[in-house]
Image 1 (spheres, rainbow, N blue to C red):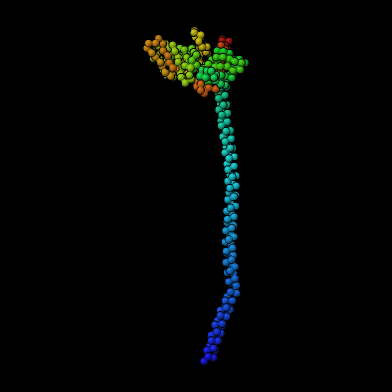
Image 2: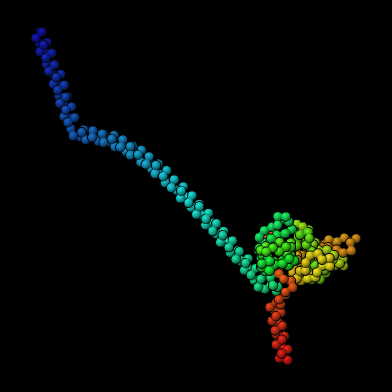
Length: 309
């Protein structure tokens, strides 16, 4: 019995060993298959490829960031240069526009100078008298150019010839001009159409209108705002003011001032010259009148006709 049991146990052990060896052999055969090796290599390649791609992406991001920072600094510099260049271009454009405007104004002044019927000295306003800020200004011509005290000063502005004032003091190279709005300025004047006469006085401030006084009261119903006032060319018996050439526009009536108890009337006059924008003036010699071209041509025609007769 015992020996039969031993044989049975030995048989089971041999079967167990055989099964284990068979399983081990099968596993060896399975693991030795090339497909598994290829799968393992693919797994390793995938893992290391992912790591490599991650490292590449990180390094690329860092490189791009550094490059972008450098490009941003370059763009900022180029932007600053463009802004500076644009500012220079705008300044040049403004300068060119100012030069064109200056040339236009000078051409206007030149045309007026050529048509002016008096001997004259063109001048430019160069400053203000600090002691008489609201009643005098300085021009850049003096005795060396022929300017003398009491010479009339006129200007051409907005297509109109207007009276500015007179030379108060002549220096060697500069002169002081008293404008119409000065409190000590007096001009013998008349209405261009109605021909009523009076005296135009300043009120000492360019913001205030001029006053034309001593107008006959019978002119009350004839005077209207907008009527043109011109110089009469007459001297003043009181000796105040200078003698201005006749026919120079002084201004326009802005208001009629009438009082029943006064023996004369007066009007407020808005100067035709805007003194706040005045740049160029002409100092004229009122005693030297040159005939206009039309009058000169007419005189020559009359002389020829008399000669033919």
